[in-house]
Image (cartoon, rainbow, N blue to C red):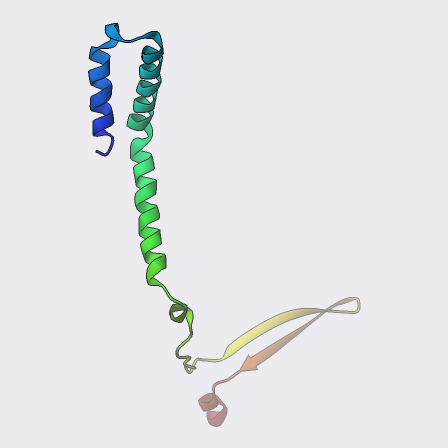
Length: 108
């Protein structure tokens, strides 16, 4: 849409092609190549610009407070079992660590 005046001017110049100097004809050919590029690549470029604008607006709406942790909750969970392997001489040593919630410790 923004290129409409450019396209209209090229069409007007094309109608006057026989009256143009060699340098003007060369410039018109180069302008037509630019037009073709806009027609072919314009939609892709526009989509990139639109996404870029959306990202810019999203980034502008963020501030340092957006990334601060405001609350941490410890929720009761069931038993957590972690198994680890550690090198021990020739082989390896396996051990288990069990964590329980406070309620599970009291009930045990």
